[in-house]
Image (cartoon, rainbow, N blue to C red; front, side, top):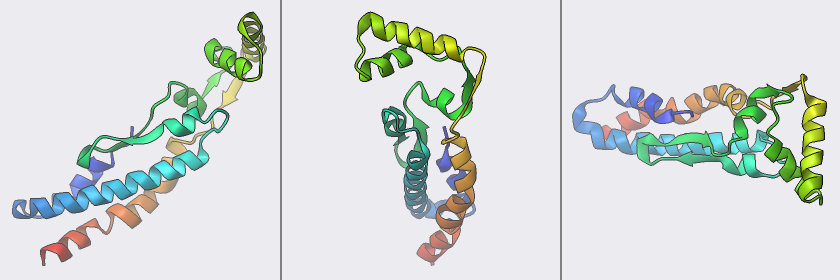
Amino acid sequence: MIDLGVQCQKVGMMFSAGAQAVTEIHCVRAVDAACDYLVGEMKAQANVASGATRDGIKVVGRGMAKRVRTGTWQSIPIDQGYTAGTTPPRALEQWAEKKGFSGKQARAIAFAIAKSRKGRKVKGQEFFYKVWDRTQPIIWGRFLGPLGIEIAKALA
């Protein structure tokens, strides 16, 4: 989970307590914009086989507590990669069912695929942390960096 609110608060603490409301408003706007940008970038990079991973990337929380997270269980192995043979059989079974196989056939196909992959490393897509690393300078430059100047202008 990436917490942009904490980073934003570090910028806002430079100003006096009397200006807390102004600081809070600007911080919330910056966090909103940064989270939306980050979600858009991650969705563009995410797996689109079923759309579940891409649809699971979302902003959760309110105000300064907003965070970007993936809401599906398969996001971590898809992002980080995994040792084959550890492919969740239910995921393969669901895939086989979408291809038109049912019941016993789908389970057999899932088992065969998992067994054939055993011992091989499946490379991750790196749509979460790699995108974060790539967009962090953009987020700081476009959303969080100018925050102090915007707050100072609003208080002047």
